[in-house]
Image (cartoon, rainbow, N blue to C red):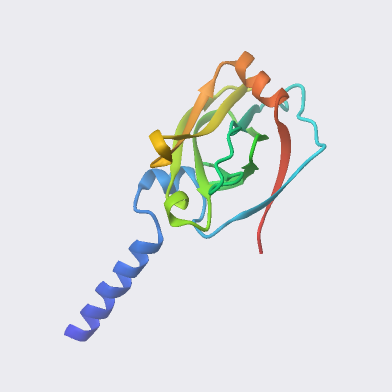
Length: 174
């Protein structure tokens, strides 16, 4: 009996280490083990949202390349599923139904220090509207700590971010 209880506790502890405990992570992001390959795209975003939908842009605003980091790949999640990833100064876009949504970004990295970083935003989408978000990595002094931010931006600034970035296509790595 004690052995069975110990096995159950050990299995529960191991599972808890692999999956983030935050309910917000599960509500906004996607499965932890999914990673993306990215490439720039010639695809142009639609001028207007699809009828009955809203359009969401997420632009990665990362222009300073730190030698140990390179050009980061940031996964973008919505309501518990990954929508894709950005890479460097790029953006992706997708349609959403009207209503409440939970956005997530997570740094995709083989280095644990970076792969632990995530940021979240809330969106109440209205049909026919376009929303812009900026994902940004900031550093404390002397590159000691990294921070990942996801912020809604004014439509004028959002359009500027999109126009000064490249569209990116992403697909899950096999």
